[in-house]
Image (cartoon, rainbow, N blue to C red; front, side):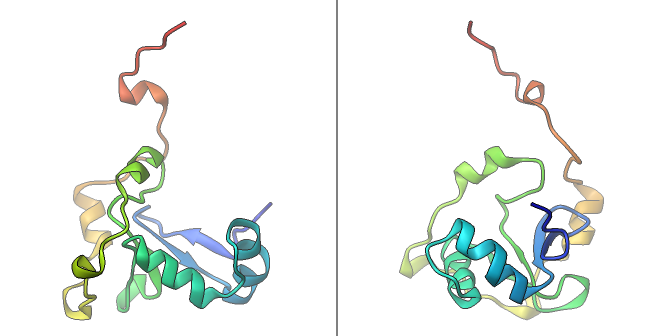
Length: 121
């Protein structure tokens, strides 16, 4: 299903943005989650360490250091922070993901060969 007008990766591949919140509630959330409200989705995302950016070009985008376009294996490192370790969002200290990506770009695509796997037959 084409969701380009609903949700998209930011150009640098380090965050995603919900482009059309109403369509996201109607088309995405009920398909992948056991609820249908965007507020519940945001709460769950924050529970997994996603942060919502509040300034600049990335305003309203969500990021997690282990959720990068083309690198799905990093998701295995994601954990639900305990209540005592929850990260407090500080708008004055948000990362500039565009600048970070200029120095350390996320690959456009990746293949299994990039992981140096040995295939057992």
